[in-house]
Structures are given as structure tokens and as C-alpha cells.
Length: 387
Image 1 (cartoon, helix red, strand yellow):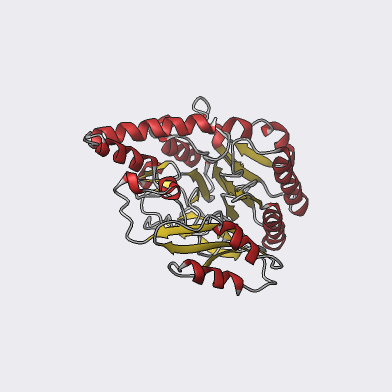
Image 2 (cartoon, one colour; image 1 turned 90 degrees about the horizontal axis):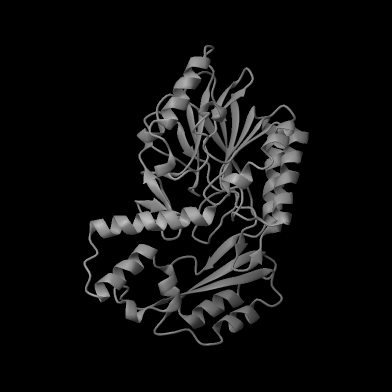
């Protein structure tokens, strides 16, 4: 079985107020061309199709046109599209029935009553166990393994078995994600790989933006990563993964097909921070004819000049680049003192860190029990926002 594995399109994403439709359309066009060349047996989109739970009509139309283009390019190829934590699971399934006319399987929510509906049979090629994002507390114990066991009963011909999941797996490289820790990335707590069960030939993961394998002992657990960078710290290649598996039990062979971005995200200076005057000079000397989004990393003694943003924008006049953000860092900042934080520094703190600062400032011991209670409340709030 030949699989195209992708995830985290974040259609509709805005970068510091800039509309990224041109980049996303370019990405989708490149993906259609890859399908034309590779002729996959199945196309897997493992969550975070949209950037928000309420995408605009224009963004939803972008997805619909992509689905039609995929179908026109390779009509026999099923598309398995699961919801991620940025998607609305219920909205994802509104058009589930008409999508099937285009060979699309849209799976937005866990079906605990009829879990076999998550098993998508790819005729004479294999099986895809399409599991969308769900809060770990809402996943029944042994849910993943039960799907694998049901599939094993059907799989009398030894065909490849693919499972999807949109989650944070312990041990992943979360470079490029803001406010990430070993315990949680993007609001999703880290999950032990063993909880996803045993018996799949390839685990197609979504959520983490850096393409990578996760150590499993079988070289068969992978994040495809996002095909277009979402933030400036995603300083790595962006691609889709082509996966080949001959038989159940075989080790997958994976190749990457690069996706190029017509408007790359560029940080000046490329390493470290520069003084304000130095940063302006770097921006002034940036080539006029190279499209890019620019972030300036600036080291300051106290605060940036009031008109810093206007100054920087003026330096881009006549250039194809766009100034997005001035990332200012004060020298010798003490981030443990909440009273000395700038607004930007405050915004860069994780919610649990702000709660810890507040507790310490008021003489409250922020012990393990309080931290766990805070994490549970934060996850409930995030879950409500995703509905």
C-alpha cells in the first residue's frame, strides 16, 4: 500500500494580520501535483485541517476545491480526513455523507457506540483506522487496541494496517511550537506511545509541526509535520510523507516530498538578537526582490522606541518583504518577577507559569496538587473553546 501522509494544514491561518491564502493555495497545488506523480492508494490528512473551529466560507471553499482537485487527479484514491484540536469535530462531520461520493472519509468525533466506523477498508490494499483528536479523558480505556483487534479479525490476507492519531506523543521534538514543554504541546498532554496500542504497521500522527519519526523500535511512528510553517521558529524543512508498506508486519519505507513556500518566514538576525540600530540596518539591506515575512529579534535595555514599528515598516517600502513582528528581549531580564514583565513577556508565559507567579506573589504554595487541578481546568476551557 502506498500512502500520502500529511497533517496540520491550518487553512485560514493569519500571520500577524497577514492573509496567507496565496501560500496555502500554492501548497495545495503542489500537493495535487505530488498525487499526480506518486499515485497513492490512500491520502491521509491527520487533523488540524483548519486553523480555527469556525473557518470562513472562503476557507471552507478552499478545502472543498482541494478535495475535488484530488478526486479529479486520482479518482480511485480514498481521502481519509480526521479532525484535529484546531478543528470542530461536529462541523467536520456535517458533510460526511456527501463527501463519500468523492471517496472522502471525514471523521470528526469518536464513535464509542459503533467504533468499527473508524475502520476504513482500502479495497485490496489495506486498512486505515481513522481516529480524530479527542481529550484523553474522553477516550475509552483500550479504544485504540480494540480497533486494532477488530481489524486483525478482518485482515485475513495480511494487508497493511495504518492508524491515525492527532496528539502529543512523549519523546517528540516539539521545536517551533510556542509555550511547549515535555508535558504538553499546543494544549495536548503528552501521551505514552503504548496507549495507542500494538498491531499497526504505521502510525500517521498529526499535531507536531516538525516532520519526524518517534522511537518505537519499529521505525513506523511518524509526524508528517505541517507543509507550510505556522510560526517563525519552525526552522526546518516542510513536506509530505510518502509511505510504502508491502505486507502486514513489514517496516514502512518513507520518503519526503518537499513543499516550497513562496513567502518564507525569515528572522533577522538569523542567530541571536541584535541592537535596534543593527536590526534596522539588516532590514534596510534585505533584498528588494525576495518575498518574505520578517521578524526582527532585538535586544533592548528597557523598551523599544514608541515609533519602532512605524520605522521598521517604512524600511520595507519598495521591497517585497513584509514586516510581521519585532521580538524584543530585555537584557538580564528576571522572568521570575511578575512585576517587571513587559506585555510581550507576559504574553509569552504559559498560563500555568502565570498562575505560579501569582500564587508565589500572594504567598500561596503552588504544589503538585494545585498544578494538576490547574491543568485539568485549562484543558476543560480549551475543550469548550474547540466546540
